[in-house]
Image (cartoon, rainbow, N blue to C red; front, side):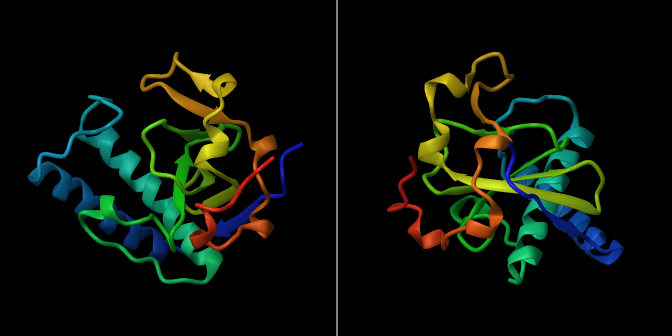
Length: 169
């Protein structure tokens, strides 16, 4: 059974702000020759929508935690929100997606089927997600898929600084 979901409703103004962030990130990536890790090659509109969806999940987590969303360019050196990593998927029934080359930390699984309603399904540590039975070599970029039923509830989210010492059974 999946853990309880935290639901975040974004305002139209927040969605406009997020669009601005996504546009700035897309433009910065182009200007600095940053490649899409997913190798989607589906055009700039698709890549923009991926950036936008990612920022929606981050913004929603910041709102849920009651912290300011800290948007910066060159964000690869930063954690997404308050020290956590956020993975936002386009459908609520999709699994948490992680990669072997991700940074150790706590990963939050978010989903949005509209730009205003975001579900925060739960969290896991990177270490716990990288189980061989979860490896999905059939994905465009091979990854690990952690089912929502195996995530910890958002109500039990530890401080991000504990990610290196957090162990899971």
